[in-house]
Length: 205
Image (cartoon, rainbow, N blue to C red; front, side, top):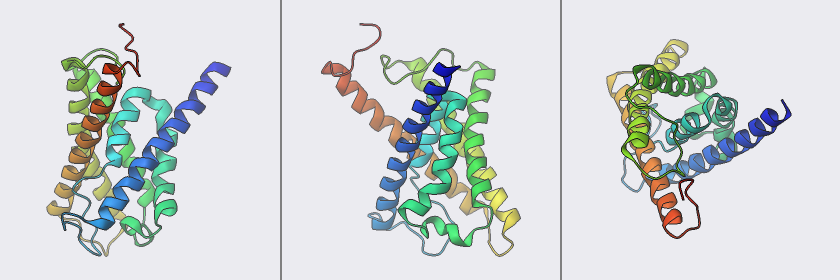
């Protein structure tokens, strides 16, 4: 029992810090808007939402242990970084929509496991192989679709003054997908480099 509690605390701290780092990085890039893609005063979503990568990786690697810390990061991230970010102050039910996004990832993991499209336990510390990344890629694709639909459905139900159309949902889906792929590729490069330089030892060595 004590070991499980310690493990839960360690996972929660790791998940929270990782998510907040990606949220802060995404917000900086979002504000700078290097590609001139940000839409002012619109609930339209980002074309590269990096925090969705944290949702996917943390749920895939830590399973249900990660959910409480992910949710805490979701609802405190905007307040710590910038309370007006993502129009949080003007959107009713943001916290419910955030939970919906996390549960969309959990559901995606279960769908992939149930379908047996990919098997095995997954870790970035293991050698890169098709099985690991097939699982992660499928979860990213499914969770991006579900998250875009669930999040905007909740927001549209609770906010009569907001227009949620196909463009908004599609933008959310693309943003979650590209953001997750960017995080995944970046993590793969980092850990592959560390493994090659022996700074990280592979379990198979």
